[in-house]
Amino acid sequence: MTYEEIPQETQVWYAITNIMLFICAVLVLFMQAGFSMVESGFNASKNTVNILFKNAMDLCIGALLFWLVGFNLMYPGDGGNGWFKWGGLFPAETLAAADVTGGTMFPQADFLFQVAFAATAATIVSGAVAGRMKFTGYLVYSAVLTAIIYPISGYWKWGGGWLNERGFHDFAGSLVVHACGGFAGLAGAILLGPRIGKFNETTGKAQAMPGHNLTVASLGVFILWVGWFGFNPGSQLDFSSAANINATLLIAVNTLMAAAAGGFLAMVTSWCMFGKPDLSMALNGILAGLVGITANCDCVTNLESVIIGAVAGVLVVLGIIFLDMVKIDDPVGAWPVHGLCGIWGGIATGIFGADKDMMAQIIGSIAIPIWAFATMFVLFLVLKVVGLLRVSPEEEMKGLDLCEHGMHAYEQPT
Image 1 (cartoon, rainbow, N blue to C red):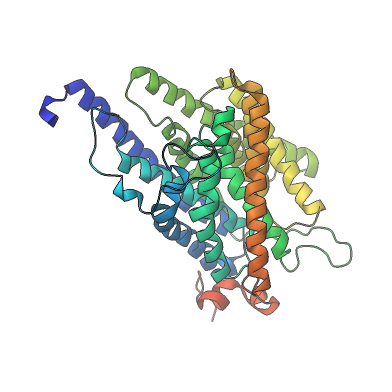
Image 2 (image 1 turned 180 degrees about the horizontal axis):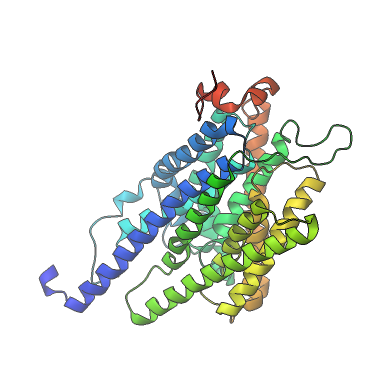
């Protein structure tokens, strides 16, 4: 059938679906800029180049390896045993011409959207290991996560694997994307150990190590918030009917309200606990609300999204305090935001989502974090044994920008 023979209405809905998916994919890709700003702003200026470099390579390496290996691990086609299946190399071989009559989503648009998610999962870890991890070791981690670890757990749900068969619901990736990255970051933070000066040598208490630019960090959070309107609404995938457009708009409003509630409750919680409102806590609260709503934005009401975001805002503050208590150094709060609130998103889906199986939600909310933590712990341990994990104390004190890259992010005083 030629394009001229296809009904005009079919062509219009096809065009709407694919241009919407393209726009959403670009918004998710732009989230890399947001992560770069948040992570660099929350850390010392002497590590800015290193953080920006890692985020850039997450996208470059992630795009290449997800295209080469990861996509066909995550979406291998029919069959398999529910745990693992590989569809071979180069998904571009199957991303051929559009079949306008056979479906509304062009495979090239689908790949573009999915590869942006893979890069997001990888870059979450950058902030958790900031200021002390060797650049070479980080590149190894990023390659393994985007090529193997993330796609396999993604297959369990989105590729039709065993979690999907059990009825587990994770609409846009509270677990598949965010908890995967958050628990990978936790493994890295544990094996790296804290930054020099993070914990008092005499009392063992956590000491504040303020970021060098909260203006940049705030900008990054707003970029991420905007990018999330590609992340969640884009996961609707099909925009070829009025009903689907209505669903997309519900998802968008739920995303907005959860983020707002998360930021507000994180501010209130930190204000009550510390005596003053804390900007960094509020910013992380916004992100926590976004992570919490990502699994269930399609199946809850506006009011329920506010409740989900509010709980996430409280959890992220408590999670940051908990890490300090157990002496785990996570400079940007990657695990409290993405790991802890990712689990909350999965559980909240069982609580609020209509007709969602709570047991399936609990199983998925445990299985994916364990998979990410265990596999990444082994990888980081191997990197540690071979000397590719942590820079020397002298290099850490000088800053990774100069020692790892031979440059500064900012003009130095003469």
